[in-house]
Image (cartoon, rainbow, N blue to C red; front, side):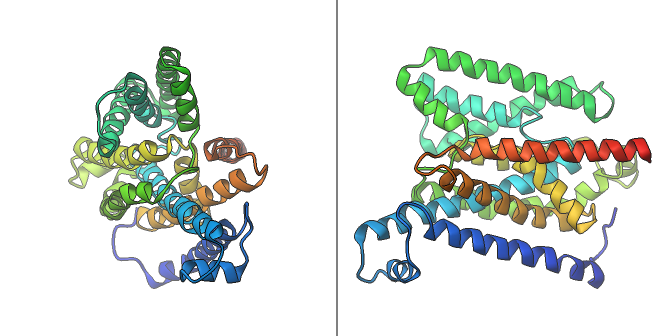
Length: 342
């Protein structure tokens, strides 16, 4: 696995995918600010952004509803894409993902417990409780899977633990009132709707700090992808390094779960798409491009959620699961076919 400086040829190879992703994000951003109810003309957008005279309702829709939603979606998608790259590399398992290893379910259970049991926890501390729940869920899966061989065993154990945690979520829902059920329903499906600049402000410090932290671990991920024995032979303390990477992954995911609920398959799919396009396993390349890919995937899914059946809106977490799960299934079937014929 490459660990030296990136070559000029490698740098040039990623320019086109990066350009396409930025162009896609720009187009999705334009769709997000212009279309909806009401549709805003370009002149109205300019007037609202410059705070000139115009329709007060349309200015409010743009500045207080659509822009914070888009900004939050970009950050959440990027953090999920980065977490997927780290997790798959650290576990050396392309099936690894927070929704399959108990992290998302554990974080969701922690936040749901605060809501239903009405624990006196300030909202600013919700990400830390979500982190604890995510780490606990992931730890159970990793401890249970220590004796299993291959990715299939870990996947099955992860699905079992996730099912148990989701069962506990149902118990919480039964314990709650009708208001709790409605709140948990909208939260547990994963949504960017009704998010404000306050949510963006809470997410921004984590986004600014955690993405550079994730990049710090890319060289370690490259070594772990060579196998534990090779990484250990090169001087790495494998267990300690893997634990540190998984804590970073859990933190990236837990913060998004605390703000938006569990949004599935973005962290699982973005690294696969990125590796396929870049034709590279080098985490130093895959992680930043996966972050862009995750941002584009989630923003696109959110526009579908917002516009396809307007004024009815299906939570974005449903779309990422339906579309992302279907694409990931195609990846697995294609890989299985390659293994059979190879």
